[in-house]
Image (cartoon, rainbow, N blue to C red):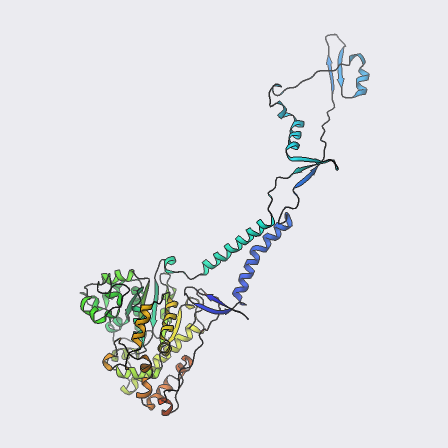
Length: 537
């Protein structure tokens, strides 16, 4: 069976699908009902083209009038008479007269006098519209009918078909930024220590993206006595305001005399280091985080809001959502065109990275665990269990039985795939949100992922040039096998669903040639009736 490419709204993505689907059948039925009934009516009434252009008429049209005229004379008893009946005229005898009777409606000398004569009208019509075949003695008169030839009819049908196809394609094509006249909003959803900062920078350096890291950080910092479940609505509402370039939402979480530097990790946003927010970095150039810190700490957030409004895409990175339900209002919001990129990573690598940053993550750990009293030895495993549970829940919701408003707006990416095929994966994500890769970005991404070493503890929260392959495999040489086994027990379901193999021994763990990543299907596409069609994971 042949495969065809299908496109979805609102994402600019290609899929592979069979032509024999319910959607194709629906289109065929609609087109059949549109064309066939009118054509049948036309054919049964007059035909598709003129086969005969005349009708027959009798050659002679006569009018006969019978009358009797009797007139009295001055002599008593005398009269004169005349009629159209010959026998009556013979009976009248000497009283028979041939009358001269004239009734005139118009002056006889007028050139229009003959126009009122029925005989003249018929004769004139026949001269103009009729011809006579001598052999048949019949007069043929032309019909007042437009003649449409077969080529003309086929041309009209072809034009109509092309118009319907173009209209159908235009209606179902993904709307671009220009046609929609509004922004594309992207949520980079992940968890701590999963490579989201690097991926965020790959978007931040794009000249069409306004990027901001973790606006939920302000909420959790201001309300740190709460738990993740109770704070999720506040984080969502904060994100909604930032998506709409309204930074006044930060009034509740930052000092009254605020600077741009009060925004979390603000200097990692190229847009806040470029005009109109700051003249340091021209659009299209790559920003320098140290230089931005020195020169772009401007008082107030007015210029940051102005900068946000000049970009076609607003991307927020967030690690503080553990399910998709709380994001449903954003997905339903007609003012937002939200796409979700879900970044996951091998739980064993996440655990190893979290151990290095345990103190910096202590506050977030307490909120994730709902302020529960848990021993220090178990905290990291409990947090990792919550992270794995959230990945499973989000993936199942988005891919197995997604609501209509979520289809076509979710994409799951594994950090390991991103490391192995960096440019290909980032280009795929760019296409998902409607961005284009360029040569300068490719070169910058290559240099960032092909540095030397794995990075140090001091670099844990910095975006530095490292060897991405070494970083992704670091846990296999540094993490004790006992911890690896416990992690595998805690996240067994998530690892199976997301495509990570377990290791059964310390030897397998240290055997770096053993690939622990299960290849995923490039396209997992199901055509279901929805407002936004399914997207490749």
